[in-house]
Image (cartoon, rainbow, N blue to C red):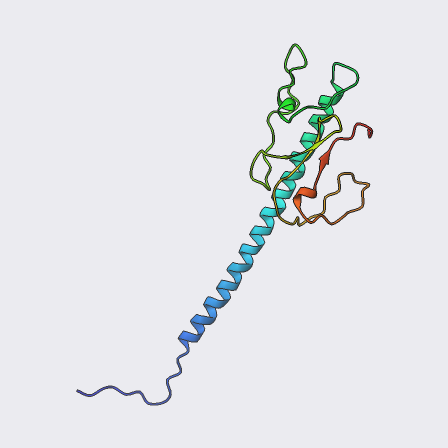
Length: 158
């Protein structure tokens, strides 16, 4: 039996083209994954700002609705959910917000000198993409971690 022999040089074009195609596809997939990860982090940071702001507003509401003088800060975040200082329970928050960075409802607590809660911060690790300014008048400062984003109510500021 005779074997059919090719004349001329075999080029082998398909295999290198396939490898280049897989390489380009892999790079594109990696870039898409990186972009999606950054988008998720941005959304988590935005959720963190919303949660922190809602707690500050709730602390402010609790403080200014105090039935006694001097006014008091809440003793815990649960006091913002169920304020039992009145005949009818008040709710300054519906629920303790979820920390999107730490993926829990376990917040770091900023305490007042009397032990009351004046604010919160995330216990999550990681370096933020954005800089957080508690007030619009504050200069942006680089924060090395999300725990440096403190959401605090100051009764001396109106």
